[in-house]
Image (tube, rainbow, N blue to C red):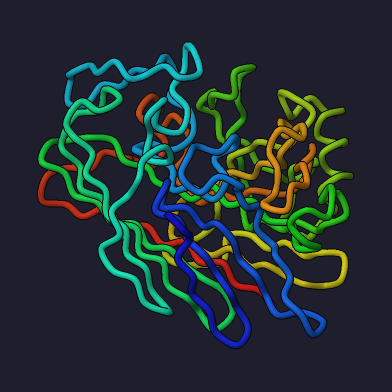
Length: 324
């Protein structure tokens, strides 16, 4: 199945039914088109690193691959033993979504997740609606359930504003509108603490070079591996700017959303196995992923924002990417 294209005078975007993924995003720049999203070369199969995919039923990590809802325990798929990562082995990113409608400026995907899939209770009906903007693209996720369940969806797009296969993003400037973050243990699971970023290399409240801050954070023992993979507790509520990235020539990406957090991940696991559609390997630090979502491992931390969806409720989550 081919990608579904949307375009206007400034933006070209393509989305995939497999994983309801953002396959590409191109912006008019210097008289031509620049590709700023890492794209997968196989349009109908899983991609290492979840390239551009819609991730769920619960994004990020769940400790012990186990949750309790209303006093009932559920054993989940431990696809990163002993944890669950991004919804399990057959999470939403690994599914062929139904195309409900497609037009030059909007594509609607639907997915039905049955009761006990990957261990989660409840039949969950999910929609992902991609809309073309004058200066970018957005996706809105909605979901309903017939039994209490956990839901935390996000999109795993990776950005390199110099061009998707132009090399490391170390010189990109990153700004995150968050005054706190959630420290993790050695497995990347939050400890439950909410720690201020002030005075640490993880303070991105003002723009800072990604490569320099990565090295400083590692030296200070704030990263579990040689890279940034951190949940930031974003200030404010509602649809608002969560983060900004500025490339070497001034092209700026603003990531907006209505989630309480954003996971920043700088691709330190990439090692050339993933290739662009042009056959160019994506190497370490090839891009930055900024994943708006609820805080990781929320069911195990009473002080974290709740991710339990109940019958009669509608889960809604909007992510917006704008380029200038």
